[in-house]
Image (tube, rainbow, N blue to C red):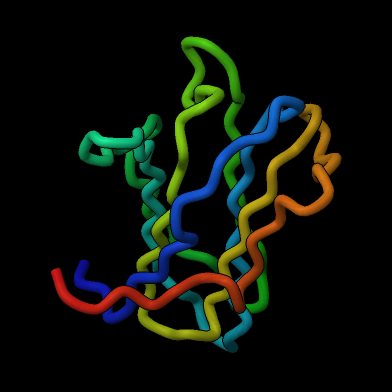
Length: 126
């Protein structure tokens, strides 16, 4: 499915206490919205590459939130010391992405790590 908009968190690092990275997308429209979320590792000096589980494409019901959290650690989707980028593709800018870095696997956000909808940047071009 083609998407009109690509929104990027920009590259961000993970603090030493990070245990999980969670992306959330709120569909703040009155209709179901198809989205695709791709998470990249962006090692310094190397091309960025997709992280598991790869692009996730989902239909988000009207006024509903979806999310995906993955662990941080050696051999996990997120590795300490490697910057990360979250890219959300959508067809309505009322689809609102957020990223949180948790200090546990229960949703305790590390202060200062939240990247909210207003922080995402619209990407233009291929």
